Amino acid sequence: MQAGVTVDVSQVVRALNAAQRRQLPYAMRNALTNSARVAQAEVQAEMVRAFANPSRFTLNSVYAKPAYLHDQTADVHFRDWAPKGTAAGKYLRPQIYGGPRDQKPFERLLQQTGAGRFFIPRPGMDPSTTGGMNRGQLVKVLSALRVMRDPHQNASRTRKSRGVRRNETYFAVQPGRPGLKAGVYRRGDDGDVAVILSAIRQPTYRKRFRFYEVSRDTMRAAFPEQFRRAMEHAMATARE
Image 1 (cartoon, rainbow, N blue to C red):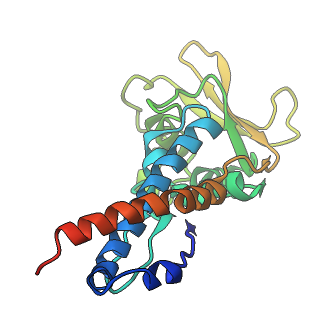
Image 2 (image 1 turned 180 degrees about the vertical axis):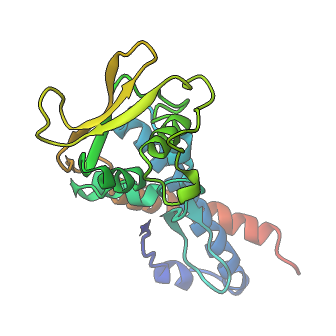
C-alpha cells in the first residue's frame, strides 16, 4: 500500500528566472521527499490515535520513499516484509478499508487441529512486551499440538518439555465437545485447565485507520512550505 499526491508546479515554473529553473529539479526532489516525511510522522501519529498501544513494529512499518532527480515522486508506504510473522501492511489492511481480516499464520496452523479458523488470546496466554501474544509460548503451543510446518519442531510425545512451562500441556477442543468451548487449553501441573485461545468467527472490522486520507492531506498541506525552503536552499548552494 502506498499514498501520494500529484503536484502541479506549472504556474510556479513560469514565474522562475533562468537560474531558479536550473535548480528546480533539486528543489523538487527535496520538497517532495520532505513532504512525504512529514506525512510519515503524521500517519504514525494517526496510528496512536486509532489503535490502543500500537507496537513499535507497527509504528516503524510506515516509511517515506524519497524522490530522486530521475524519479520525481515521493510516497508513504508500508514495509511489505516482516522478519517473523505478518507484514504490517497486510494485517492493517482491514483497519484501513474495513471488512473481514485474513487468517494469521498461527491460525492457519491451528486449523489443522479442527478447533477453528480464527482465535483470540485469553488471560492464560502471556502477553509480549508490546502487548501482543508471547511468541515463545505460542511456538510451544504449536509444537505441543504437533502442527508446526517443520516436523522436527514438533514436540515429541515422549520428550519432556523444558523451561518455566515444563509441567504444562496443551490440547485443542473442537466445536461441539461437551463441557468446553472450542479453542486451545492449557493444563497445569496441578491439573487445572484454562483456555488460552478461544475460537471465534471471522472478525470483521470497521474502517478506523485513515492512512490514505492523512497521507494525502498532509502532503498537500506540507508541500508549499517545503518547496519554498527547498528552493531557497537550492539557490543558496547553487554553483556559479
